[in-house]
Image (tube, rainbow, N blue to C red; front, side, top):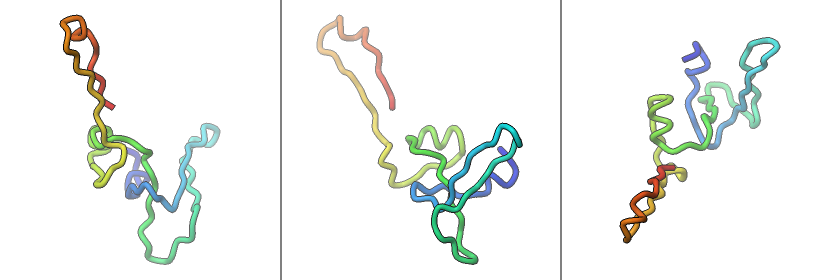
Length: 87
């Protein structure tokens, strides 16, 4: 957790972009749309599945288009050696 940086709320339609500058060792924030006085400022934590949001940041997003699970289910004994992939 980074003081102040983690105070911004997440939105897939964020008003602010952020990046980290290695030279200055600072986070930089830039408005990408108009922000009114008193308006909540949102950044995006990226497009991730809810289990990633929960494990890394302690929240989930509903609805979340990134929510999906990919399973391969085999019918033959040789197919059971295949990995199950969660995305």
